[in-house]
Image (cartoon, rainbow, N blue to C red):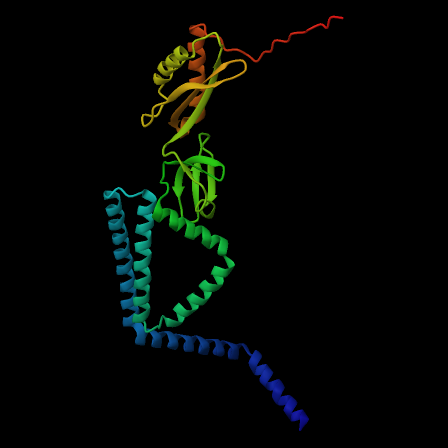
Length: 297
């Protein structure tokens, strides 16, 4: 009995390993897959075509709406960052709506997807609190607009010209064309200095007490006013800054475009020196007079 069972098992294994049997099984499997595909397209061909048409029309419609929104924002002279954000948000909203309609056309319920997205979003929100806070802060910046592209801001001890405002971070540039990336959560809620397009340049020069400081101030006003580094939005301020131990300090406050801050500083000091040298006005150096008193016995 055992021998007949063993023989039967061996015969089955041989049939299984038979190339003809293996080929027949593969052909049968391919045939079943083919029948499933044919049946699917037979039953859902019109739904697939309809969903595809809806998606194509939806993408085209979303792109046109985004362009219209962008043109409207530019016509009303809104900030370029806010304009692009509104255009992209409107396009994304329409695409999501079109995708829901297309899935409904195929008979697929979106309710489970929405529930799954909600659960995933909750877990992702807990895991990515720092990243999400950057996005929330970026959204706040875009809506409130404490600064726009082209402004000069100082925040967290960093000063630069705003190059681009994104949802996650803000990019600044300085005179050396170095890009400074600041996460938006470090901007919102902090003390922010916004000097628009210009930066404040503070200069100081000392003159001897034998000179007339008012005449020097008038001369420097004429020298600084002729330079092409001064912003047209604000006039420079020049006056007596302090009566120091060895000199009368003349203070100069002028506003200059941020991208030329240091070149403006060097150019201003050069013209100040040439003007003082031409007028034979002394620039003193620190000195002390020491008197020795000899005790008489």
